[in-house]
Image (tube, rainbow, N blue to C red; front, side):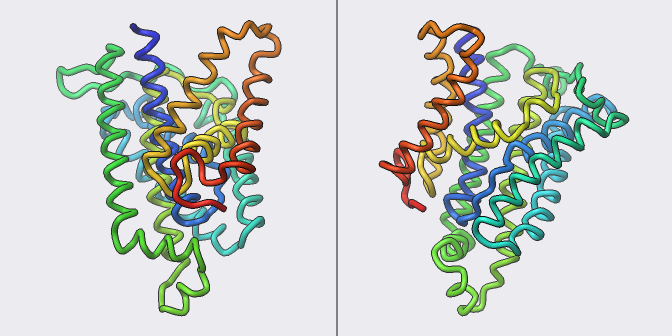
Length: 288
């Protein structure tokens, strides 16, 4: 039972990441391949607020969302001036920069050793340390993120970002400041990813830079690609599929030395097959 709760908790965390990235890629057309960096900002900010300042989990989470959102808006403002492939390449570079900062800023992040002793969530006398309660907390936060994403995409704001995805120049002709819309959605997506980061840090009790490399960004991208572009429910489907896939591979009998490489190879194969034969994803509403 605890094993299933563990998988379910990871599903919730990665579903939040999938939903937040879908706002950027699926709805706005911004091919952001640095979501692991945003994930890391949330995780480290939450960990530092909890360990250095001894803040309650929920206050630490709100502050981490603020930090991630501000940084996401700033990078959105800088990188959204680039177009197409240049934006994508700049985002990959940003992932390397963030990981490099986490490794080298030892006085703050403890370098490659990471931060340990991150406390579990609590609210007064109510503790979420027990796996079932932590999973329920993750599920509630996923529900909030899902509802927020649905509200955003169904609003007039959502119609504008879809217009930017389809034809940014046409949106400009109609008087919309497309840069500000892209900055705003970058900040919103980053704040949501910050929630996932704080959850991961608290759940494991430890964060280190190796957990947030470019391969992690590709994994989060695969969730959106497999689940479906411009469909919030698709992100849930993609997270469920890709969180369960490594567990199914445990029964395939691959030697331990190559198991991790096989998993990455299968993620890459899934991305290629979906882009070739189902570019909109399983239940997506848009294809690049």
